Amino acid sequence: MSKTPLRLLLVDKNDQDAEMIYGLLAEQNKTLFHLERSYTLSDAKRDKDFNDYDVILFDFHRSDLQNLSTIKAMLSETHRAVVVFASDPHVTMTLKAIRSGVQDFLQKPDLTTAILLQSLTFAIERQKEHDRLYSLAYRDEITGLPNRNAFMEQFSNVQDLPATKDAKIGIHIIRMANLKSTIMEHGLPTGEAYMKAIATRIYGFFQTGQFFARLEGEDFALLQSSVEHDGHMAYVTRRIHEQLPQELNFHGHEIDVSLCIGHAIAPDHGGSIEELFAHAFSDIEAHMIKDESAQQAVLG
Image (tube, rainbow, N blue to C red; front, side, top):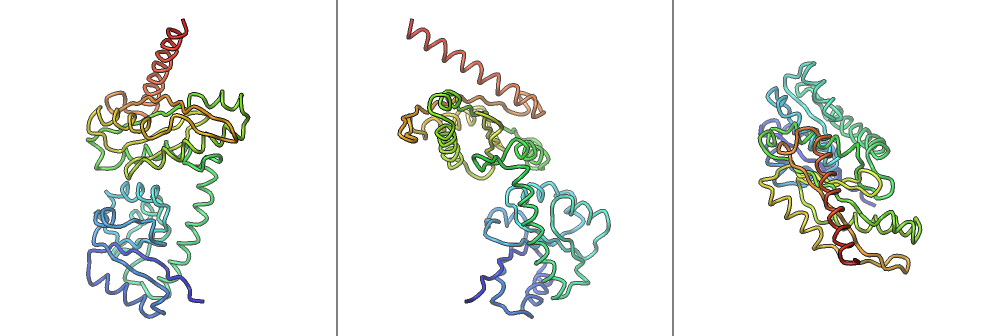
């Protein structure tokens, strides 16, 4: 049985250095590796799906110290092993790269086939262990979505990105308004099944640049890294409501789909995550009061 090739993405604009990496890997059985190349990180983000690769090899320069936030955000999105190498590394550069989340830092002048293969092996194993620990700390156990900790960290990463320094960041709080009543009426298994189904459908609506997480209880959050205007937030809210069915069947029970959505935009409604949360939750409370008043008017 043939072994599945290790999928590698090389990000390096220097042709000579790229040929060196190809040459080092060619000294081994070529069927063990599938290597593709992008010239810059921007090219890679535009043309490649990082999740298609086992390891990303990145040629690191002193100027890239300013772009570590970009690399950190990429790592938080992809959870792929990253190995960086440089011609003239120094302690500060190495430490900052490692702290950003890369698995190994290699010196290009000392690079050999044995060192490269060892680094790839160790990087993959380190990433596996990182993923295990990350899942414990940053994943919601019921839905499998990122949790509140992951959302807070992602918000911080997005704020640090150079591309979003002058852009607006949007946050939607999505409350499953009838989750508690569903659990009380139909039981916990039905309530959890309902929550997972709605969360999965909402998650499927979103594209790159958006981050969806469960905060706690009935509340979920969506982070948009680039918001052009308030109408964009209203469009996302409307799309969520339109894409979801009015009711779903779980364990023989017909359950009405009831969501209440509030939003906030940075810097319009604040700069910190706490300020944005406060505004979005206040928005939800206002919507719920309005809905209750409307229901009382109908019943009255």
